[in-house]
Image (cartoon, rainbow, N blue to C red; front, side):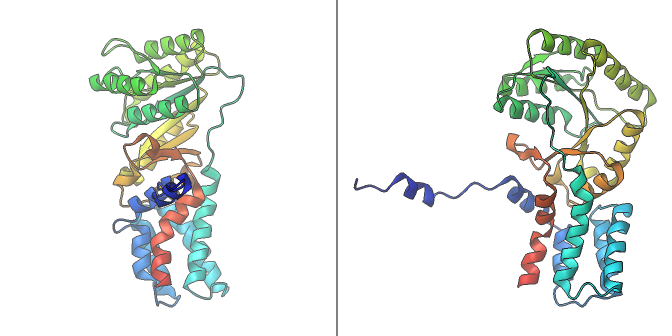
Length: 326
């Protein structure tokens, strides 16, 4: 009874940072959107020159032409109507405009009851982090108490299967694989069938990275989707495109081409920690109108989280609020 209470000990321990606190640190560490705006606006009056500078910063932040035009049109309209009295009001309007673009894409995956196994197909170009993303998802769903099976459908990159097996071990998930250089459709077919037979809750299928401009490779993906439906009618239930945030506007173009060839039901945006331009997600939501299921800001398992539009906007504006409050 002479020692400290357990609650006293826990009070001395620093609270772990939330995902979006870490996100804020990642995207506010260089000359990106919020950093630029924070140094641009304090003490300024709202005029045409300021609005032009904001537009430039949005474009430099990889927000994209269409999304930038939408945001700036709203600001110009409010300024003309004298609805914005000061810089704080300007920021509030810009934040609201961004949230309006992002909020429709905030659609966390809800796995319906009675669909078992639920099958997710991951697609994308080379180097976006598909295999790592699949591994993190497997661990996430395992931690939720679900039985997970993985399909090593990237039969062309030798390290892909080994990498997936490492993640499978971590997540205690069965990995179905085939021969190197073999037909990916057969591997995925076998994985889905095995998932049905063994009562898996979720089957997540990896695919080889492919350039969106290669017609033959895109046709192969269509074949994979047809094979999924043969193995389990209605599969794949979700087709997620994994995009690399560091590719900026090129990532959006990749997704547009994929989306024109097949149904894309969700986006996973990786490597936000490696991008100096966090605004790319605005372009994705504005142009693609596809749910952003997850965003990633690092290599750790818990660095992949469901997308939260409001938290993301607040992360973008954190440096601005500090600067304007000083």
